[in-house]
Image: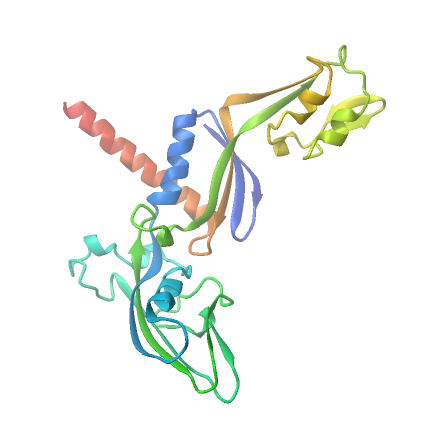
Amino acid sequence: MEITIIHKGENDIHFLLEGIDVAFANALRRTMLTRLPAMSIDEVLVLENTSVMYDEMLAHRLGLIPLTTVLEDYNMPDECDCEGKGCSLCQCTLTLEKEAGDDDIMVYSRDLSSQDPKVVPASGDIPLTKLAPHQRVIIEAYARLGRGVENAKFQPVATVAYKYIPLVTVDKSKCTACGDCVDVCPKKILRLDGGKIATQNTLDCNLCEACVDECEPGAITIDSKADSFLYRVESTGALPPKEIVTKSAELLKERIQVALDFANSL
C-alpha cells in the first residue's frame, strides 16, 4: 500500500491510496463516516426562551454545531465509569445566555460558553436564533462523544469520497487533432499542443467520457486503475483532516483484527 498526499489544507485533505481493492477503500470511507467519534451537543436544558423559535428547534440547531474535539480527553459514555450518567470524564457543559436590548440581535454559535476551552464551536459564525427587543434565551447544554452510526451530528467529516484513478489515452493514429474534445471536456484535462492532443491534470477527470463521444471511435479511451483511489476528505472542524484519516485507519485495523481473531477461533 502506498499513500501520496495531493493537497492538505486546514479542513480538507486529498490523497492517493494505491495497492488496495474497492472493498477496503469503501471500508475506510465508512469508518470515517460512522465509527470515528466526535463531540456534539446531545442534551439541552432550556431555562428560558422568549424568542419566537420553539425550544425543540433551538435544541436541534445546537446539536448540529460542530465542536472541536480532543479524543484523548474524554471517554465514550458507554465506556465511562459513570455508566453513561454523565460526568466530567465523558461530558462537557456549554451555556448560553443572551438578551436583546432595544434592537434586534442575532445569537451566534460564538455566544456559547464552554467549561472546556478545547471543546468550542468549530465556527463562531453559525446563526442560532434572532432575538427581538428584550427577548432572552438562557440555555445549558451537554456535549458528549458519539459516532456517526448513532447520529449524523457526530460525524467529524462533512464530505468523504473517493474515485478511481483515471487513465486517459490518446491514440495519435486515430486522432485528427480537431480540438472538439478540448472544448467539451468539463475539467479541461485535454489541450492542443503543437497540433496534437495532449493531457494535463488527469486526476481531475470525472470519467464522464464526453471526449470519447465527441471523437472518432478509439481516438480517446478512458479507463481506471483497479487498485488506486483518490480520496477527498473534508472535516467539519471537529477534528483535523489528518487525524480523521489516521484514527480511522487505526479503528479499521482493530476491527479487522477482531474479525480475524473470531475466524481463527472457529
